[in-house]
Image 1 (cartoon, chains in turn purple, blue):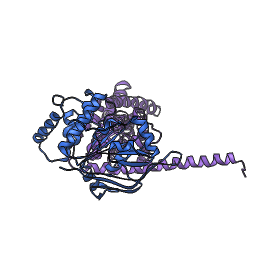
Image 2 (cartoon, chains in turn green, red):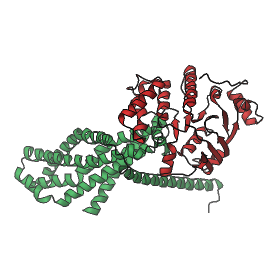
Image 3 (cartoon, one colour):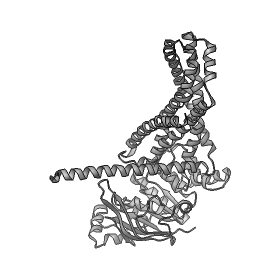
Image 4 (cartoon, chains in turn cyan, yellow):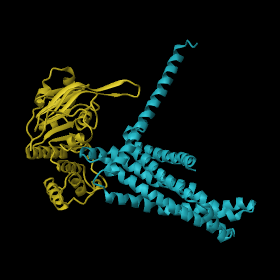
Length: 272
Length: 261
């Protein structure tokens, strides 16, 4: 038995620190859970801000077109080359279309689109709300009895729920085209077998899986990124002022990206 | 239009610090802010002046005690009732809290667009009238970043008055302004209050200048609130902590006089 009082104090302090961290995490989860509910409630509150919704569609959707196009094209081409290299060993180059399309539609399309949107739009969302919070603009909305969820956050959520699945579709199409260019034009795979492999192996279930993922990822990105910005003043250890916004923005992008990867596995495990 | 009264009864507010200890901000305070008058809440930094405002606005909840607005208890109200209560308040924030992605016109028009059913034509007329009275006409298409500190305050005040509040709360309204601008802003407050008739609660450490406006002064020190019917009364107080506060802020004895309106 340890009789040293200093050691005892150290143990008590460790337990206190652990307990404190546990409570902080629980409070954070509770806060974010309520935030999610309020976000949904805001979507059904009137009047709907159509102009803001369109502005967000433009920012999240149209603004991400270029980055999605180039990411999809390079991913598709790499998949075409890698796929050809692997399949060639077994003399199964004809399956290239099937491999590229299934990988893109079920996994890489939704995941990479979500990661790009999290990095580009999620960070902007978090910083915008964080700055509005520290400069008391959100308090001002509250004081004017204007619901910040209806006014600021729900248009972002609805825009992401529409834009991200559409961007995912674009990613899939451009990626498959990229795979075609690399596999057929560069490596000499038969174009007919590329498309026939894709047509025969991709089922509705695969497309549904990819679509469910893209909706879930859109929700995760808006929830985490806007939520971190909204609560920037309450996040323990974030500090104050501009420093807290930059810290929380980095945290939001990392957290939403990790969540996308974790949920990718969970959704695949449940729906496959 | 007449203002509304605000009353604190045994209000306690504390925060739990990171080391688990209780930090008492308001220790069972009792205050009465009369309708239609100007009350200045003074006190050093970190004494809970802004917390008091947030309690009135429902942005924070009291840990015990009761808060009344015009005799109606508002301590724990939520949802629609809280929303309705907030329409009775106007707030001028420390940093003005203007929406930086909107122009001056859009900022002032926002409460009318969101909280009333007025047509765009009516809104335009009201906003331009208000901007004219605050000498902001010609600046309506500027963004907050293009305005001086004093102009931002005037835009903030114009916006806060659009819904004709019964109670105006001013949180450190002259922070960052030069002495001339501070005087101008105080004169503007006095003039507007005379015209509109709202209850005015000013949280400030701008002492003794802010005393010019005060019908009563509340000093917040070490969790306690002391009410003084006139600025002079503070200076004659026998309480040690008030004496210290007066020495630190006012210095020599100060005689109040009314602001020229």
